[in-house]
Image (cartoon, rainbow, N blue to C red):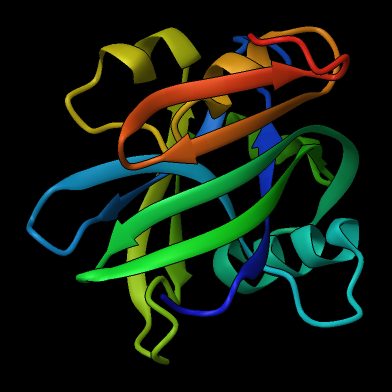
Length: 172
């Protein structure tokens, strides 16, 4: 298992349609999956600044990071290795409102951490559409947590579909 990684993901909700901006990435076995745009948090970097940096690096856009809506303890397999990350999912908005008029965004990410840049497409989808899509939304449980009112903590493991806990520590 690699070291535990800190990450941040941005939940940008379209003000007119209620859809969220998601990226579509390729897995290691020719499968695809969706997630919110984001990435790693550098040592000493607050998650709001990391989110703004990640959107600038990957999509060449400026966002304003909002409040945290969910934290995730994500245990997953990728590239034949076990991974463990803690992620903060934050609400975010585009600084330039005209960006909400775009249907798609072309992004570049360093998904596997080896320095290889991976191109991807980001587009608007409802959380319901993501649940019905053949390409899963990761981390598991995050879409449901974002739909709730209030902050949620999600534990996402390869063996369980989802285990959400709300701010009061109650099973979700």
